[in-house]
Length: 420
Image (tube, rainbow, N blue to C red; front, side):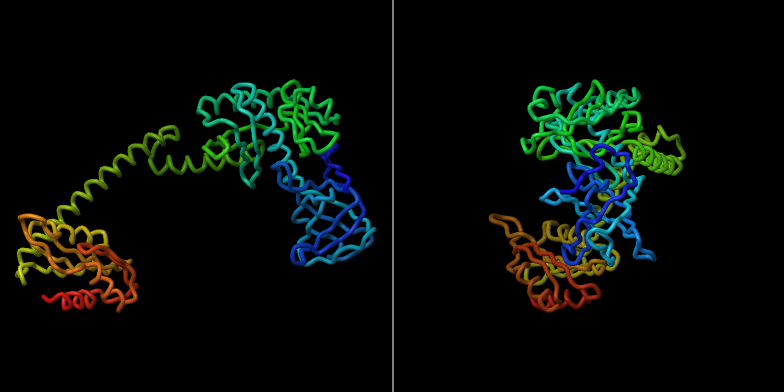
């Protein structure tokens, strides 16, 4: 079992140790197990440390090994995975460990901030945390609550930052499980060990945890809640602390400033400008749809007017090079719904190219008699010769063809099949 130096000294970034064993794990990935280590392994929602191991008594480039990942083994050992290729040190070799200080500080801020935030949600709204996740650019907690309102988000954020600004001591202590059961922990872990490591934010939060934490709440810097969403086990709340909060604020400010410049307005007026633009966009889109509908109808009526009738129906064949398949479909619908028995064989050569075959539906009583052709079968016959895909019913079918396919030839093939 590896001795965990970070348990009592989370601020420790340099340490000396001895290689207990080495191994090539998971498909030749080199790994080192030390007698004691300050490297934190991924566990409890917190991600691992990175850094370097320097071999004592060795020179050259092989003396410094990059630690890329750290993991907990089931037998209590901590495994330090190295960047390959690397010459593994011999068991018993002396090593000096150096931990990435910026990464460690960030993790300490995020994890301690999570303790404070989780306690704030319980204090204010009786919403317990059921899980914690640390990502590269944000963290999240899952609350046992069906929803969390914006006022509750703001309230928990305000209360959590009050604790940060008061700079309360954050202490580590060890107690027996029997004693822990009497202390009113925020969350009591499963009964797996007799001694528990407790993290206490003075007069605010007490919980069992194996992670690394700052020594006072002021070192968290700040806690900013980003968003919330419904998840299977409740509500997920994203947040950032300390240096991450500063980076996120700078990124958000830069994006908002750029948006304000595009709108020629102030930062605080950007939401109103976006709402106005969205409404204008909806209006323009509706006007465009109406115009296309009218254009398709006029073109359909013109095509029917200029098309002679054959065997009691009019067959309209049209290929569009400047209109997409959506307009081709609209045109075909207008042709077959104009009150005249008709077949529309329509294509678009715009990317992606496609075919639309439609006919006037059969009438059950009175009106114009329907065609006897089968558009679905006709389309499949034409597509089989072009390597296309599609399908449909007796009265309407649609499919796509490979780019560069000569759709005009396919339309002629379809027209010849049904007879024009």
